[in-house]
Image 1 (cartoon, rainbow, N blue to C red):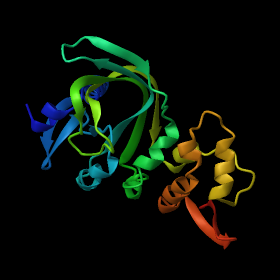
Image 2 (image 1 turned 180 degrees about the vertical axis):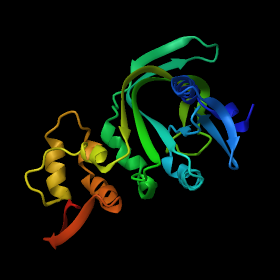
Image 3 (image 1 turned 120 degrees about the vertical axis):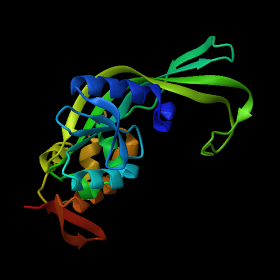
Image 4 (image 1 turned 135 degrees about the vertical axis):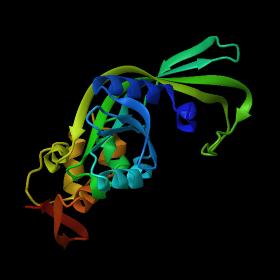
Length: 241
């Protein structure tokens, strides 16, 4: 068993099983100096990545250089059920997290891989899911291993499991990404115009519509939008022909 397999979450493992069966692939395949999650019967590569997509960029670029197609499967957690257990494994709390995911969350993940998003040998598959997060109570407040907690808490995260697949969406051409934009009143727009349009959809969380510059930045660097002018300190864009 490889180091990567030992450290993968149950969510990652489940998605890897689903996609290996779907594409009749082999898992944990050593090839071109990498260990791939899945290599399909046609020789294409599938990588399951639950976070930090930018870390995959060198692997993606090298795989494309070797003339292989590569698909990145990334889950977005729409709903999260949190189950907390005591040290004896007894369930002490079962609640739904108030935080909801949204398909537009992908823009915060793809900032580091924009250069390959429209490569014909690359595709991004988003799996919208419901997930179960498991926690275990601790005797005293503790910090996480990655030191990301601002304050220590009396629990640690011990697992995340797939509960339900809601939807899957594939992105490999500019029309796929443009389909995420809300209707805009004009062909030329700035980030403020985009925010106003996003805010009309009550299903879009505030963290997304309050940061429209992220979306325009990604689409501009992908070559989907082109800059037209600056007016009242706002940059305007239109679709690039």
